[in-house]
Image (cartoon, rainbow, N blue to C red; front, top):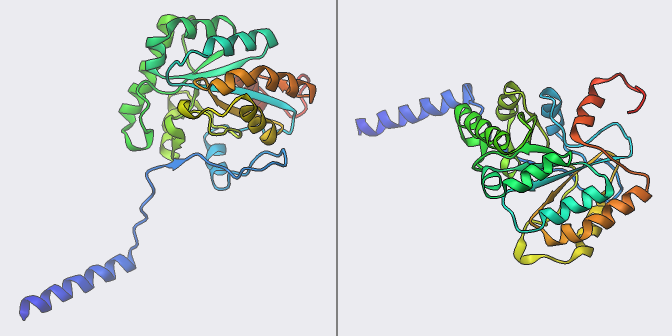
Length: 265
C-alpha cells in the first residue's frame, strides 16, 4: 500500500513539473516543400522563408525578373548527362550540377566537362546522408571530402553551393553550412522525375515544367531521367520565346548583393 501511494506521488510530481516547465522538443529536420501553383507565381514556403533569409539561402529569385536557374541533381549516372550537356552547350545556357561522391568517382570525365563548359558544380555531399541527424563534424567531413574530390578532377577548387541530400534541413544545418562558407540552394519547381523505372515520356517533363514556370524559378531536374534529357531543348527554346533568360547561381548571389535597380540585373 505504501509503495502504491509513493508511486502515485512521484507520478503526480512528474506530471506537475512537466506542465509547469514544458520542454520544447524540436523536430530533427524538415523536408523541403512548398505550396505548388499553376498561376506562374513564386510558390509560398511559409515558415521556411524566415530561416532562409536568416542564413542567406535560396529557393527562388524573388526579384520578379523573368529569369530561370537550371539545376540538376547527379547522384549517379544513367547515360543522359552527355545529352543534357550537349543541349546546354547548343543553347548557351548555364546550369549547376549538384554531385555526390559516387558520381565524381564513377564519372570524373563528365564532372570535368561540366566545369570546362562553364557550369557550376555544387555539393550534394559525399555519401548522401541526412544532415539533420549527423554531427557537425560528420557534415563537415561529407562536404569537405566532396569538394576535394571535385578539385581532384577539375579546375574548380572551391564549392560555394550546397543542396542538402533528400532536401532535409533545419536551422542548425543552415548555420553549419554558413560557417563553412556554403550557401543552401533549394528549388521552386520540380516534379517526380527521378524514378528511372517509371519514366512517362518527354511531354510529361515538358508539361510539368511549363505548367509551374514562374519568374525567378530555380528548377530542380534529375539527370537520370530520360524524359528530362529529351524535353530539355524544347523547354529551353520555348522559355526563351516567352522572354525568360537563363542565369547561373553566381548571378543570383551577386544580384542580391547589389543595390536595387543596378544596371544589368
